[in-house]
Image: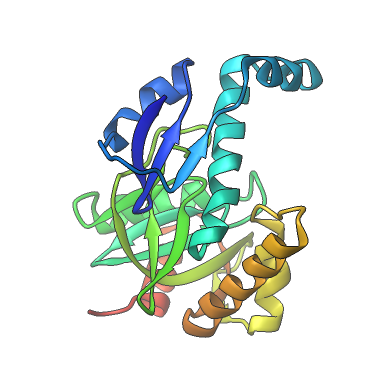
Length: 235
């Protein structure tokens, strides 16, 4: 078993395949008591791989250890949002969208036009969000999708933005009622009723405190300037 510190939680976790061996070491941390324990038996990994023959056993381990972690953080006032998180000036801005829409492309353009020394990716696919002491933090985790873009750090959440492709650049704030179904499409939805209720409680607190936007954009500098100037927060 390996010991990791992820999202300010002590995680005791079993893994042995390539992606986790590459991604996890930066999160290594010794501790005596675990907050979360993740151990998926080899037989279960093999059964999941048989059900998903397009995925390797390495992919299965990576995906399902991540799913186990993100379900567990519900017990610690946390959720996962399928998004690309870009950090600028002490805040993380989460850009979420259906696969192939261009969330990673857009955050990459923030790095290009704002400078990689100013804007950096905290997690390119599955950042964790936690409520701690009345603040909302975004964390990098080892589970960052098809890329290895993740940082072992946390910063406060600045805004959540849902992207759609558009020939015309626009950004507009949306209500909590509009945001909830969009977020539900992009997060892990637990099967157990108590965990589902916990997720809704956490989500309600996040949306009460966090501005949410809808962004239509192309791949231009103007799109970056529009989104950045609209949603940026100052310390």
